[in-house]
Image (cartoon, rainbow, N blue to C red):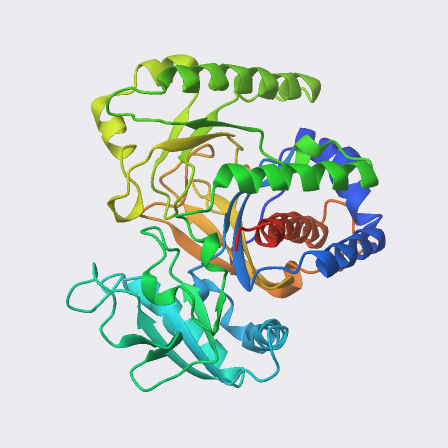
Length: 418
């Protein structure tokens, strides 16, 4: 069985003094802090959070509110998932009996299809009558599924009339008319699709939350967050907005280097340029210096012109690159944890693993594989009898950081324009 190795000793010392000890030793206060937050800001129905662990910091790099990958979770913990689903749906209404899942149009993506089958099975086994359909039509995914209908603002699929609709389609192409104004609740909120949602806005909320959390628990917020900047009105094909990228990248490199100097980190700063909306690892480019921006080649520019569904990429977030220094036993593997939740309840996750990428590259790409992380390792109760840097306590930190990201999404939801 693959086993997680320890990270370099110099990073361990930083963690012990600045992150692990402060959080683990105050975990009761941390849990009380979270309980108060959830009262005001209820968590979205479900989410998955991509984390990066460099050793000297752990931070989220993406928060997905329409998660896939349920087939990669530990199948031995289904009872936990069922309980979390029941709790998340009962918070909406105790009268919910029928659930319609609206999926992406990935009819040929066997991994996504496996994820949807797993999600439907879990919701069904949690005690709900469940149906799943694509948003697009089987014959032409560019038009709305012919078996979906809206009769007097009541959505139905064939003869199935749901009490609630769960979206597993991120609405990158916009909110279709058939879903607007319907009487049934839709989870997540229609306004949280990528047509309206912005990674910059999310990480602004996250930065504010981490700032407050760090003040309470006497931490350097940088240890828990990626620094970032935003550029709008971008066109990589015509080089429109390139000056904005150069300016903000320069400032970001300076800020990162200041932190590296403070903690005597010998690695070189890098930045990830990402589409400000969208998923699936599309519209992402790594830069190690300003020359990388000036010298972007035609192939790189082409990759940065469009995102999922052929949508134009016209705005980007510049995000501090976080090295993934955690290793499995295989020496060439680079790994990053992905944590899942229903509501505010963590239900485990998996390691995304890639043997053909280095520790500064995007792992969400062809060739990746997965190793489940059991819930017992991503818990809300650290072990004070273990060394501060023991795996069980490290995984507790994962859970804390993931919930901070979920809380940022909850604030997005709280402030969304209805």
